[in-house]
Length: 149
Image 1 (tube, helix red, strand yellow):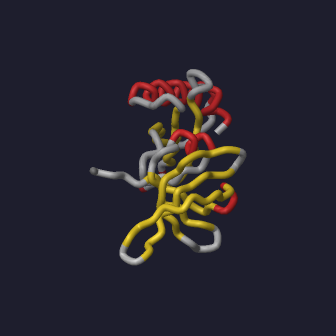
Image 2 (image 1 turned 90 degrees about the horizontal axis):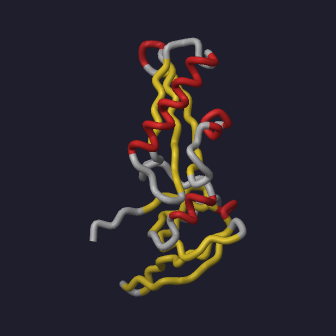
């Protein structure tokens, strides 16, 4: 992760995760998940991929055959960092809590490692919204929900 962070364009970009795994044929796959406070495009991913690829080859960091992929986290990857939560303020999320509860609702605000979350609660065939505060430590998994409305 440190190597990838050294090659970022500026402080608005951040690395969400680096996933290394083996794939068929004995190759290694290195997946770098890149995000930005100001939005991300394919050129941003390509620029980081080129810089990382050059560094890995020059410094001979990976000796076996590998595939390097740099992409945005996408919807299938849960939110992990406070910066990701901040970027998604105002959006609907699905939270899986450490105690097993699952909440759906809108992220209202994030501050000091906690969320103000407008939780959707079913009451008599009607959905009401209940504002709750929850610490990031209590969240096992958080995914952005897509609305096609």
